[in-house]
Length: 88
Image 1 (cartoon, rainbow, N blue to C red):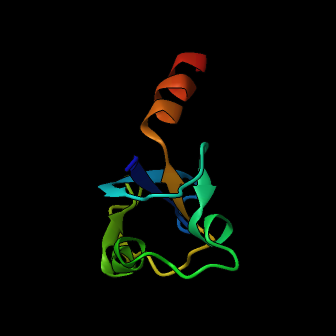
Image 2 (image 1 turned 90 degrees about the vertical axis):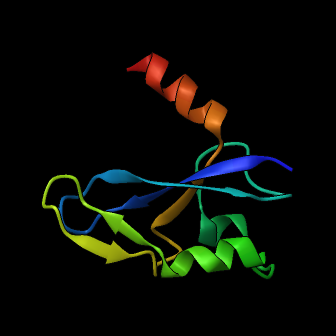
């Protein structure tokens, strides 16, 4: 089962932040995609639903916020992060 990193779009600063949380998802996306898009029309796997109660930290403001919005919480395959960092 593939492992995915989790990131979230921050409303305070407008950037995406890693949540430092990884989860296993059987039929996840092959690129960075929101949870809402990834599981549109399907039920959420329990491990994906459980991250809703985790907190994220805005590195710019120092504020914590919950991962409540599935449109702004993203599953990121680890290989995608590596490719993206090489481009920058």
